[in-house]
Amino acid sequence: MQADGTTGYTRDGTFHLNAIGQVVTASGFTLEPAIVVPDNAKTFTVGQDGTVSITVAGDAAAQVIGNLQTADFINPAGLQAIGNNLFPETAASGAPQVGTPGLNGFGTALQRTLETSNVSTVEEMVNMITTQRAYEMNSKVISTANQMLGALTQKL
Image 1: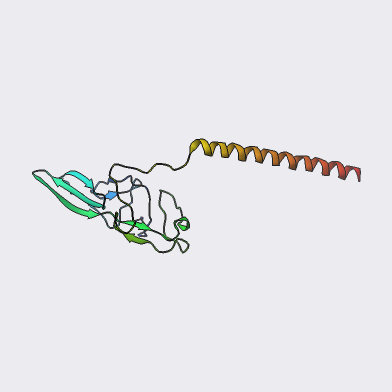
Image 2: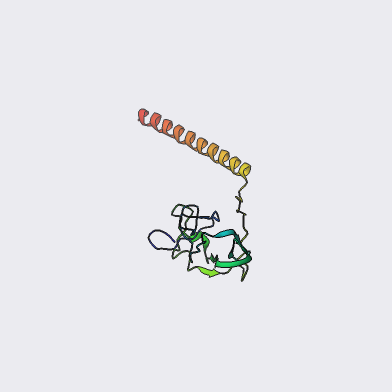
């Protein structure tokens, strides 16, 4: 939940607790629905189905305090990046389909696991160098064409 009350979606699972015990994103935005961890919580776990549980001192039984929800979009590429790893819904993305992790193709939640990049650094560096060389060649062609036009203009 953004400061202005609108919902932003994120793939960044780096959650932590704020000063009042709310589970928040790395940028400090609260989750929706809000999950608050009480001060007396000894452990905090997230199940693959998104169930958030705690244990308190003197009680070995886990207590469920909330559930993480995941959202899917018809066109994820249509989401608008607004910074802080937040993406609000747009007309191009379509409405979010909200569900429980592990059900109906929504994937699972894995505690203490972050998704890594799916880009090959070496391959992208090669692509960048190739693009840079193509740009340099095009720049030389334009410079040569300018020189030729200048010489032609002087002869007229």
